[in-house]
Image 1 (cartoon, rainbow, N blue to C red):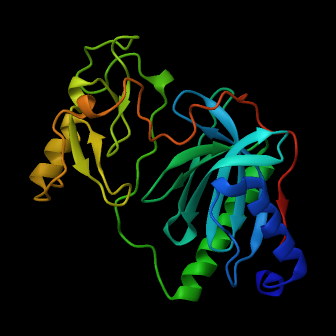
Image 2 (tube, one colour):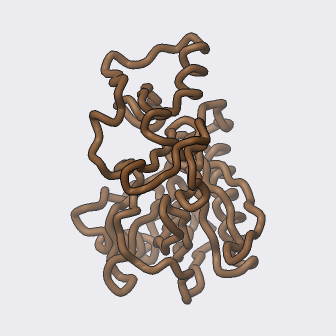
Image 3 (cartoon, rainbow, N blue to C red):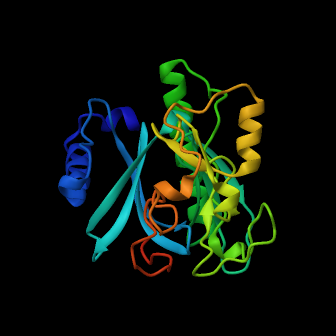
Length: 259
């Protein structure tokens, strides 16, 4: 079905519309052989709380962005190459149901669908696209370091390394980019270059720093020992969409798949 959609008018119009919705803030999405497989709204677990995000599944990439105007305009476009993506189901917990983790070297996070059926549909379509893409390119999943899924702020009232510092307005939360744990400033005062995630050294906890150093790898020359002195007073600005003040509800429209 995907092959039949390549270069079809319907597919080209769908991709052009997605580009238009992101406006000048997004990257061009029209590429020869690219097909828009499906789209819909999923609830993404962000650092502070769950929030609705618009997702677009192509046959080679997964794109998502913030919903900003009546679910017709989006910003903060993020693109994950599908050949690097792996999925892992998440057990239901309280009001958070029908979830799974999207794991990749550059970014990993948890999303939730409205129903178990929609979760199954999303996971099946994503996995099928990944398998088809790898087969087409003659590749297999590479053994690389995946980005961690960040532990939400609400799950840590104290530093998860020293277990002494209680978080407050003065003692801000920080996330280790290697393990995803929530730690205090003294316990995350080091940086290390994690090239799959960024071209600049990123904040890591002291435990991960020691493990990285013991592994024989080296921090980048741009390493900043005191991570806190090089960042704003706000927490972890690299989290993609926690500054948006939208509601955390799951969307009320069903996803559309075009296969």
